[in-house]
Image (cartoon, rainbow, N blue to C red; front, side, top):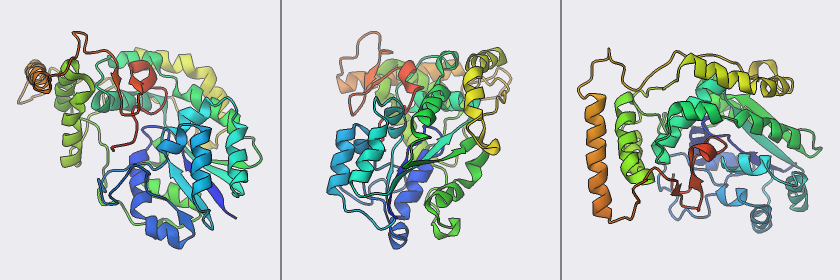
Length: 353
């Protein structure tokens, strides 16, 4: 039996780690009858080997792209593995969800097997905001993300669209329960033992920012937008072991979000196994730089530093960023980044790490 295996994310559920795990175990997977092909745009096999990167971004863009990939790629004995966070929003909003299974059957696969990870909402919304600041040039306040957060609605839509199809199976786990054993979740999906897989070379991938790093990043973003990711990329790549800081808004903001999504949680949890269900855990509010915290640089100093550096970088780049540089910034594949669309799926394209 050969399956089309799709790891669809969603975002901020250990995706980078799982993609690094798949990439570094390509030869191991091949011995077990699986194929995890390199991304079509990647020229060098070892390029950014320490960074998790999916191989399914192109196929996720449209049914036509998926059909072309399946047509051109030999069918492995046990399955073809594709991974991209972009699968989740694209498939969840597809006008004809049955088409995915049809394309797989036409290509000779017996079924589509989907690995979907979810995450408890408060920690997920906070993590998405951090990713938005890190990689998308974001400056919108944390509270705005909690007001707009609607990922569970998309999860429900996804499960309703694909959960009952005869030739589609979904393996779902809650990242909040399984953060420490992601390799076990992947191995179980593939029918392997966790010890069969080699650990990624870098154990911490795509970490968050510290309080000071976040304050500096926000100030830089305000001047040069998405180009500001040069700072966070360097910090997270060179210093992956640094402990990040999770920022949470006031509990009243957290409760308002949970109350708004309560009907969705009830419908979703009826579909989920007990251990994987959403939990409405509240977190203590955490600001960027509390007044009682001793820092070598104050938040004001960091803002000034980020602003001055950003202005100089902008001048050096001779870019034509308008005075409202907080406006959306175009991504590598044309996606426009705003607070609104950053929380509804992947916060950025995976091409380029």
